[in-house]
Length: 296
Image (cartoon, rainbow, N blue to C red; front, side, top):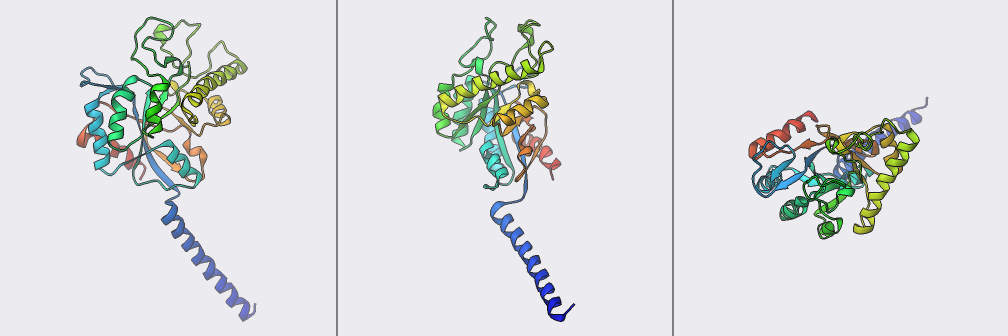
């Protein structure tokens, strides 16, 4: 090997080394790290008065306001699923300690009590609605009372302000077994024992498309997130939702998520943590931090 060629190889090695270092510095500075831990908070109903009964699915508006203020004061930043998708696609940097706020079912209190508080703190939340329950205060075709749900039209002002995003929680696959017969009951979005796979696929697709069309027609926004009823899923639903253009699926498994740039699969089957009435102040932050520490 000639001396000139050896010098050339040495120069090339140094050039490639520095190019790699500068590329890493540039990507890290302008696009952030290649992965990011994200907490997703799960809420349901907000009550005007303190929740005295042992109800893990309801909190008072005062507690909700204090929780939002604590998030802001303690260095957490509320982001949206659009932000997560943009991060994965490579075009957006996420802040430190990002948190996504979600509400399940579409209760009227989400708009009446929670949305004004979110707007007050400059935050945003995703509400996954049950299609058949829109505007209803009784269960399906019965006279059994349930917490009132809002109409999609009522959400439009909040959607236009960017305070609320509306996403999919099934049209009619969110059932309560005590009020169903064995012939009508389905466990979440899972296949019924009396269905063939072909029948199940057709039923799931029809259910999804029915609500997707209503959301897009009434609000003019895209359905990119699917929240599994009861957190129940299978390989068929995951495959179909990808084919239907969904970018994010949410479960009820507890934990923190690690989202990876250029890895769309890291947005599926995301975990969430349920937020309750007793979580305020230091206790709220300690609760969040215990999950955060597992990701670092």
